[in-house]
Length: 252
Image (cartoon, rainbow, N blue to C red; front, side):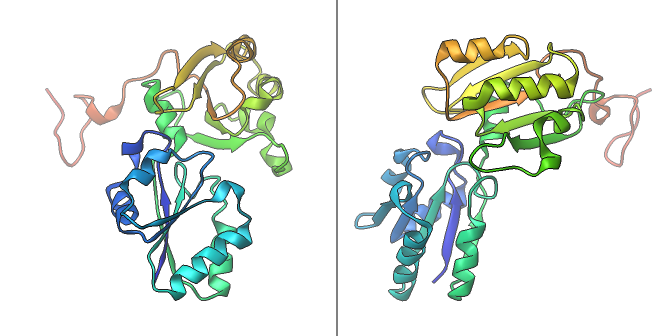
């Protein structure tokens, strides 16, 4: 039997993939990240399915549940928030499963960074503004490589989605201002993107810290930064009548 690592999406229960929902419905055992994954997902589990909240479990305890279930020929879903390949801590789980010669698959999900951008109705990649998206976080208890310091990354002027960092908004802003070299860069803070109690705050690097602290937001928020949020941009060549490609001739 195979372990299925499934991305539950950023919040809204319907943003799990069709494949992910089907696996969840068929699972005999579900281990879910209870501090982040909506418990509404568990309503789709079949009667009798065993559920475990991994928020109170160690890595070894999670693997032990998987190991026992597989030996009993049970279907197991490891339900992660967003997309499990981004800040999902799945590599360490998969390595231990490899050691035990237990098979697994990874089913992608909608990440909170795309869910957040959709919530503010923007596009990360605009012609002549940015064709690059940087996904990162500020250092905390989990360090980041020196070369990936926020100040260094901001110098690229790319669109940025900053995870797990709103609690350090003061340091985030300080580093970004130094990197961008200006404090009028647009910022959007999306608290609990796609959840029913989602909250969106707009500002710039100059005033966003004050706004975030006034709202008391210190967790579960995406920090989106860049000129893609507000400002001028060039029209895309994709639908430009003067631009030709294999599916369309230029308009005369």
